[in-house]
Length: 310
Image 1 (spheres, rainbow, N blue to C red):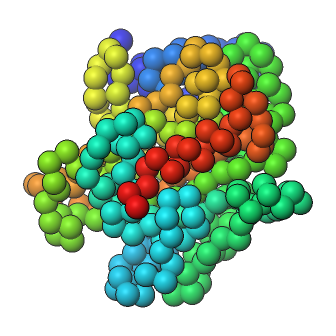
Image 2: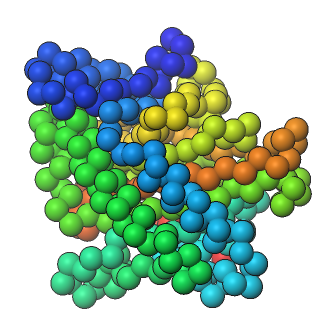
């Protein structure tokens, strides 16, 4: 089986057409891919490339600021603000000691309160918007609306692919938690060379239901692990989102689908100025959702705590 078949490209247009045969064929392809790699590429999503480019432009202005200007926005993993160099080591989630990830992030998360003070204090807090880049907020807020809609659509598709119907997962996202990271991967001209075993993001699986990734191609880019192929470069299409499922979804399907294991390679030595930026939307579910006997958000909090380096 080729890499391209392990990680297929799904055009959402046939699914949205309502044609029963087209929807069934799409669902079968999704089911096969999620059993193998836990990854898909998705086109036909309707999210304009100009919006994604504009977010990168504004975010790059922030990341290129002096550290002293960024420092007031610093937070720990799971917070809302700036994750500076050394804040995160994703390989810790697999129980692997590793150097910190070679990235910086602007991190945002669910913020609209539920009315339950305990839940809101843990999962629904105001986001922080850097004053130095006032143009970022309206762009990100528009993008987040599009990501929520797309993620709910994907959950409907996944419910059918599992043979359970459109509302099987979707009914648990009335007031869900989510996270959104703008990840900046500087080049070696900024960072110097990596330590042994150090990655832009270390090997890990995501924690939630679906992740929607808008990424850039690069030598130090995304790799996906499968039993059949080991570590391979993920296929890339500038028009597509890269979709993977996380641990909660794998558990929800009783292991039928695989939480997509992945990593981001270190900045390449032969392209020392390579700078990449990814927009990563992590979708979860309503607080208190019972996923096969596990409280979803107790699990999520434990995983977030595991990857912090502090």
